[in-house]
Length: 394
Image 1 (cartoon, rainbow, N blue to C red):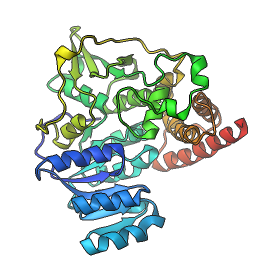
Image 2: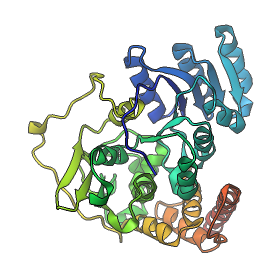
Image 3: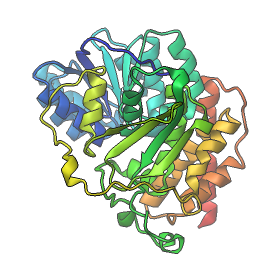
Image 4: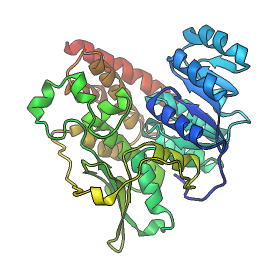
């Protein structure tokens, strides 16, 4: 469960997923911080040239590339700068446990965030969590590990950052409901028939947020909202029956909390991820980074709508996963990652992402009390079965 507290300045940051959208916006905050933060570690998946450019600017102690084939290029480019280099998944896990790391900003994509997050917790590091799949896949395990660690999690997702801010100073027993807002994505006004023929370009055209391809597709299916419901359950210790989603097309109200007396707190702001990133890096301290500000007078209308779960059935998977428990959410996440990749590559139609998940769920062995090795095995099995489902559907 997430801990609510104030904390001193967090100085040395390991930025995992440095070349992605969240990683780059994190580095912009570090750049603007005037030396308050330092990127001690920069890590990326495959974009070695981008990592080299960022390392040349920020001069971390260590640069890590997950793609081992790209390592010679990284080492050759950064050796003259005196920057230590490493490659592979194990190097990423080792990086977050370094003595010169105070906080790990986990912005890697999907399942890849699980192992380094566990390593950071075991090393007692604080975590700015932008990788929601960590808690989706293994929320119960992360919850248990946090109980035995001084680590604290500060959410980076705008929705969970909003809830976190709304909960500060409140008693948990007074919380009646968490209300997670959703933009509705690019297909909010489309019919189910129109979505059958949706192109990759259509799905990537998000109306409000500038995000990476995978999370943008998750927004289009509303799978991201399903994952956020699961994440909220583990972050805030609130049952699924007290977490709901509402469509808010303007993306100004980032989420809300309803209390026992009927009062509702909301956190509002411009749709700029640097705001929750800065709040997480500062461990709830509010610093002025001269970012775009919300002008309420310019907001002539804020609308809220019930989500259409017939059009977006993926949203219901959150409640199914939390009710069934075990390795169910791990299966959903793995199948979704395979389905999204296939859609982005033009191998399946948009509705087949959901169909792939459902077919995979029906075939993967259910484990009621999984340990870490079970999650690893479930992830591998689910990916294999999802790939088979996609192949057989063509």
